[in-house]
Image (cartoon, rainbow, N blue to C red; front, top):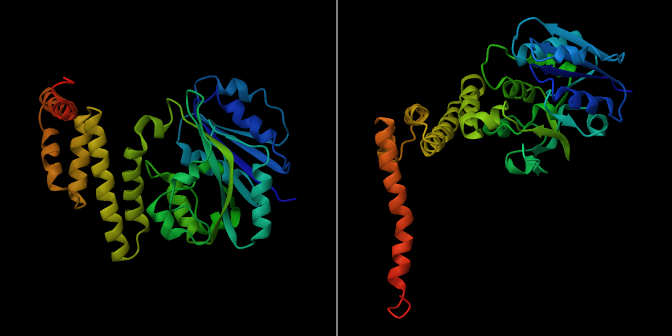
Amino acid sequence: MDSVAVVIPTHNCGKLLPRAVESVLQQTHKNWDLYIVDDGSTDGTQAYLNTLSHPAIHVIRNDDAAGPAVARNQGILASQSEFVAFLDADDEWAPEKLERQLEMFRNDPEAVLCFTDYERLHQDGQRDPSAIAEFPNATEGMVFDNLLKQNFVLTSSVVVRRDALSRSGLFDHRLRYCQDYDLWLRVARVGKFRLVPESLSTYRLHGDNNVLTHGYAMLQPLFLEMAIQKHSDSADAKKQMRSKLGRAWHHRARTAMHEGNFAVSRTAYWRAARYGHMPVKSLLRASFSLMPAFISRSILGSIHWLKSAKPKRAALQSMSPAKI
């Protein structure tokens, strides 16, 4: 039976970690070893870990937080299994996840990485049942070009061959963001990706979650900048990526201005212009980000009021005197 090393990095996630561990214990595929890397937790995580007595669970402790890339690498290097699976401490798996993915590997010996569809679980309990449907570039096979356009691989859904990691290298701890995306791009150069089109992973959104805290509009430009710097080979590819990056930063600038975060908006507009994307109609908005915040809020408030009042005036003008 195929052996799988499951790696869970955790930092101050003591309330959710037991659910992640339980989802591993409930796997229908039983030949696994679980490596939990406690990355300097101070929230009582160690007390929970001390209760674990399963012979296939191994705990690695860091006195100080080194970051998720270092923690995942520690788990990989401590293991010897043919396959490596990743699970974040705040996410969960369906019981048949590993079984489905290993079946995919057996059916396609050329596949080096298998990921699954996943559901998003919001703080209010709402579930988005198929997140992969939101990524038009999600595909199988030699995915490097499509993956370069957009990261559609959830870390907690991945099972990868150890041999592929030997050829691609491990997580790059020098990167502040996108360590997982960077690794998937390197693995994509090694061989084929396969997708199990079932939501077998649960991605939990909560207050400490990057996507919820910063928003995808903020993270997407960072993903693209990393991709340009490390993975765009040809001049044409770089040109296409720079254009996409300019649009992404422009979107981030408008989002930040709408939120009233003028410092972030100013930086994002500058980066959009740096990558050659600054429509004429956006120059006025960009100038607002240079003003004191109270002036910008006053001007934007007036513009929004005028826009909302215009349909009402038009409706009144279209009414007959009798109706008025």
